[in-house]
Image (spheres, rainbow, N blue to C red):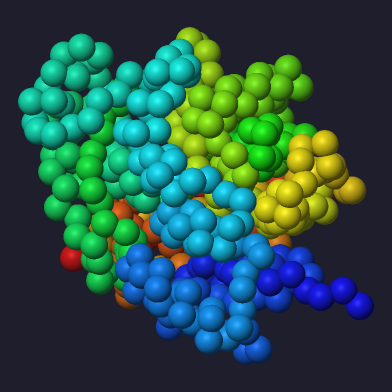
Amino acid sequence: MSRLKKALVITDDYYGSLKYSLENQGVSIFIASRKNTQVEGIPVCVFSGDDLAEIVVALDAANFKPELIFASAERYVRIKALLCEYFSIPFLPSALASRVIDKNEMRKIIAENEPNMTPAFSAVKSDVDIIDFIGSYGLPVMVKPTSLLKSLYVTKASTEEEAISAYHSILSKSHSHNLSGRHDGQAVQAVIIEEFMVGKKYSIEGVVDHFGVGIFPHTVTDVYFGYDNNLMNDPACFATIIPSSETVETQQALFSAVQHVITALNLRDCPIHAEMIMTRNGIKLIEIAARIGGFREKLYDLSFGYSLIRADFQMQLGKTASSIKLKPIKTSYSAVIKVYSYKEGILEHLNNEDLVTKLQSYYSHVRKSDDGNRVGPSKLGYTEILNVILNHNNLDILNSDKEYILEFVTPVISTI
């Protein structure tokens, strides 16, 4: 009987579909977490900040030398890179990992190598930078932190005043907010401003082998936004659906664009999650990350029966593009829908939440914020209130259920 490979899992969220998928990879697991996590039968190391020594000491005490490392979130990509260097596991060099997780640094590399694939952007050091950028490129604009904070604090500004206010709001965010439902665990370091892009948004998953060749699924992911009638500039909810409804030609163009980005950034030995937008001026990169996108592992398993985590582990064990296969063994439609608050306040309840489980394509849901908690929009740093996963063989049924959630499953918020 062959020995199980040892996998270090860096995560604060070892439960649900992530737990199920990792425990089905045929590996022995050790968890490193910043939260006081307890999992029956699995050793856990709780570490603070970026202190790798705590993790290394705990692994050594447990006689657990990892052969594979999985990081569940963007804030752990640099830690993964440093640990991979220490344990000689294939991954991005830590210096490159640090640049890739910084939106400004990432865009600078893309602008040097693929200038047509990035929107106009600029680092913001003062209000004058915002005024100058708007003078050159007009309104609206996007103001966002350079760190990849789960798309939190990203603001669409329609006036100069809104852009400046967003800039100062982002700068004021501390390392930990101590507000229920609000992001915790990564400091906001700097801010960029970029032109607002109009077009359809997609995400692309995959892994990159040692030679910089991207291995992609047979489909991209379609991304949809829903807006509350009182808040046209901030999404109240959004949905991602696979397989894509786009033409094969469009999807191939998106895969090709991502490969150009991979080459420009010199990515190697890593999973990738890219977000792209198809504008009238061509395909533009929103961001690319060296991790598997949120919920994508579950969606691809539900729809197609294969694991992105398994492909990542195969790549870490030295397999190349020719031997890593992401081919469906079944086909159905899957979606994840996230419901946010449209304003800051106290959550009283969610309208029609009880009807979600009765939808034909319902698969599962998780409440992320309880009634009575303080909630708010993502641009203020709050995470979603509700996640819903849908799965069905009929796209019309799934789309109908998606639209029902976007329109009728809405939060009732009282003023603070």
